[in-house]
Picture 1 (cartoon, rainbow, N blue to C red):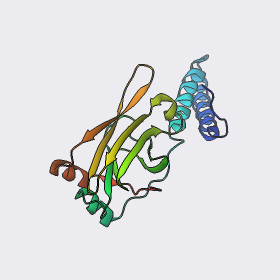
Picture 2: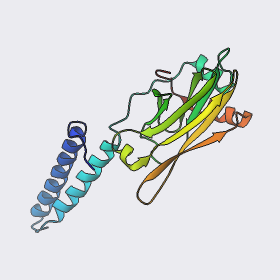
Picture 3: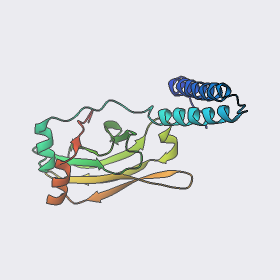
Length: 199
């Protein structure tokens, strides 16, 4: 798997710094006590350095999300689309990968990026649409994206819950169709709504 160096330069540099500080600190501590730890400090420092770089690389694709206005959230949780349009609601509430931004692309354009627990509401014209959900950064290499095609009518509310199913070699992003129920409305009220971007 080839990783663009410029994109992952910061995680790599921070990982090296963490490895150097931890291994150096442990070596100094052991030497001060009159002992010889051998390669153990280097191994421990290397482990934490790689782990730090890995976590940061997974977050490379994250964007700074903007919370939706109170008015937009009220309309979303009440399932009230704009006149003559449909409404698409996508939500995340799972624990796996909750800090990694999930890109929600609708008809080829980025609509929002969701961390967990969050949701977004996207107004759509009547007709056929295609939605793709995928992670950016290193997480994108480890999670299989998902594509969903659906049609909309005026006043219709389409709801999907995005979850990550763990796999042996690659995780899968699952989209679960949900009913726009009173129970779901109450759940969404307790969640942060992310403002849509370009759709």
